Length: 355
Ligand code: AMP
Ligand code: MG
Image (tube, rainbow, N blue to C red; front, side):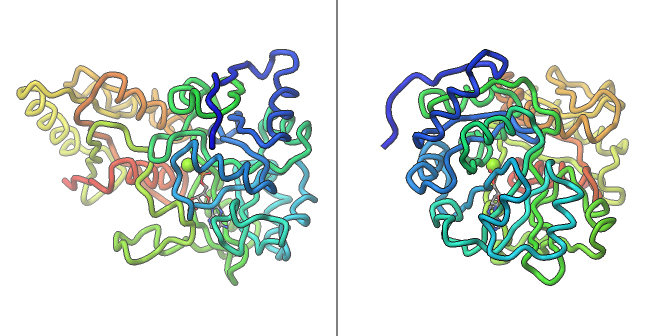
């Protein structure tokens, strides 16, 4: 049972805030904290009761395992029963940072943290507040994104407050996050390292370290009977309240063509004629071409790093303006554009209008 309390809200710069959060974690409570990817909702990963509170607070399906956060690379050996050579290379190259690795788990990691799987997901975050919290508490922190299940992941402490106020013990406000989309997840237990969730660390960055890297095939297959290897990837996610559709050029996916712009403008017109509220998610270069009252900018020019930073905030902004319908430009590729598109497709419940 969750206690009924007011959630403590403190800036990480406030004296004693990290120590207070560390005490809460040690006692089996829940603390939301900033990482470089998105805000996490943390609990003691080796305390099954504490980890189970995360599922209750988020309304998260119990088969969706948690990522365990560590502050020292060597701690991997306390959690993983086997650390393959490719994992050692990736840890050296990308930790601390936005890369999660999947290992065969040791007995001490409870089923409550791994959703009953025999594997465990581990990440060493680079955010100084996340690092400080892990070190101060002395526990490994199980932390999924600190949003209500299905909602956009939080990239600012205010987003966490919107979803979690009264459901968790504490929110540490460390300002806006740097990356904005969740970590890349790589399964190191398969013969060829496999990307289960795309992210800021791209396939080419991984391949430059360990040679061939594959994508989980289920990432690109629409058939719901093909199960993704990361259980969380099968759920609709990140969705705003309004109905989001992506408008994509059939011949040049990811490129905003004249017909993409015309299609979005016609859709906006027809909704507005019916008195419905519409928002358009656009990148800077093309944003002046839309005729819509609510144009939400994903970037000032066309750079994907900014789009990743702004994406979830933009989806929450669609709710704030009360949009009934939302149209977004599309993104593509094996690099960051593909990771952005992966999130957008889930947020849109796979509604893509091809033109
Ligand atoms: P979140 O932290 O909310 O972004 O979700 C964590 C993601 O990691 C989900 O998609 C999980 O399914 C995935 N995950 C966590 N542990 C494992 C594991 N042992 N094997 C595969 N995927 C995992
Ligand atoms: Mg999440």
